[in-house]
Length: 140
Image 1 (cartoon, one colour):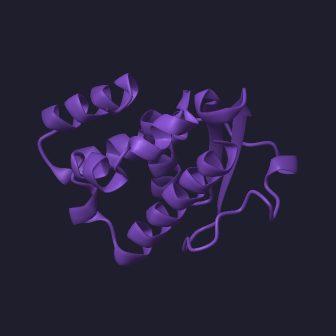
Image 2 (cartoon, rainbow, N blue to C red):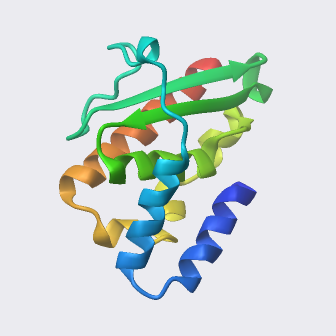
């Protein structure tokens, strides 16, 4: 089960007629996110496997499977920044146990992202999802 914020995004995408409108919406989502402080853009938060620079900063509140996962992120590429915003809609504010139960391929396919991202962007998106899942698994 996806987050309410992600369900709203799916509904928004249903109203947008073509991929260019959806692409612009993803970019606008990224523009709306606050920047990370310079001190958080360090090698430990950088995600390898992305064509552009990407930093994800997780926060775990609590312990064990019921710990709540939140995160912030940033990229030097506008579309990737938007993809981070999509992942925030999917994963932010749920328990680490719930993260393991979400099928990211299935959920992201509901947006049609797989059909319109370059191979490099798709690889980067997978790397971001992998980082989120590994962080959640370690906290569980």
